[in-house]
Image (cartoon, rainbow, N blue to C red; front, side, top):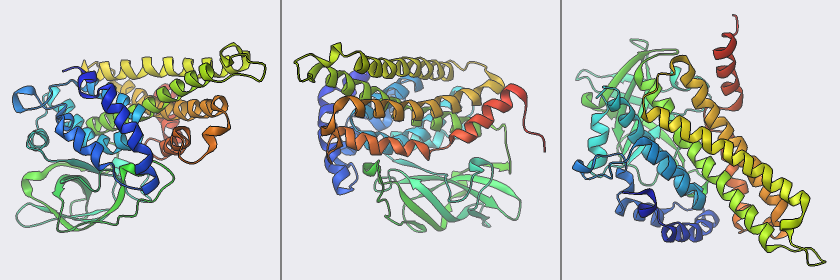
Length: 379
């Protein structure tokens, strides 16, 4: 089923109209979420034979971008469900079935969320401040704090990991919403307010033994799960910011066509304004090419080897930077009206600032690329 048939122009128009209300009320995008669920969008990567849309990962990447042009907060919230769907899809395509349960859950209507990020943990997936205690029956109890848990009001399954002090291993599994999983409902932020990405307290949350899928050593690891998580998270998160960058160009185009100088001359004939728009357009063309190439290579299982992580972090980093630059360009071209509370530009300007905080940040991305090109820093 084509992307435009699910994410129709009419649907995007409704989402764009609602986005300001969610933002002003600091409220979860409930109606957006319900519409997307009813359309089967949460089952995008589930095979048609199992009741899903049967999309490729590449299609989902472009769909998330399209959704973000209308409602970035909604797209970011849905993203964390789609990240787990993406991890399961990418692993299965490479012959690794350990997350088949995730695909089955999604087919059955479960809603996934991403409980990975922790305050003060800049090792991300390579260490954890969450305690993982293995119980006698093989289940694992998790105690710790997870931040930026997008889709907090709606998820039913939370993917988490923590460190088992007894074995020294990092333990990955899933817990259900309910006992031992407490949302602080503290999402009152500069932007992306509709995502309601609350802090989550794990207070002895138990993952049944069958939901504990991976144990890894602390530190960088070549396990396919790590690649799958980074690939899905970085690519789909980038999509949200590619969508914002694209929408900023659309707003800039409209501004030039609508605005006139005092002498009646159109801004489309203003050399300075044309230059600002052209720079935004060139950034968008470059970003579009990079996004499509990375998504296609993931789908096609291209063997980039050590070059995979540089590509992934470059896409995520440039998506955020280009989106910020394009939104700033739109601000120059829209005029003073955009400065008022409630304008689409004003909301996008705040939403795009969230791009600073997603892994991998710019410094980490630069280190990844430099290490690929000339080797790691010496001890």
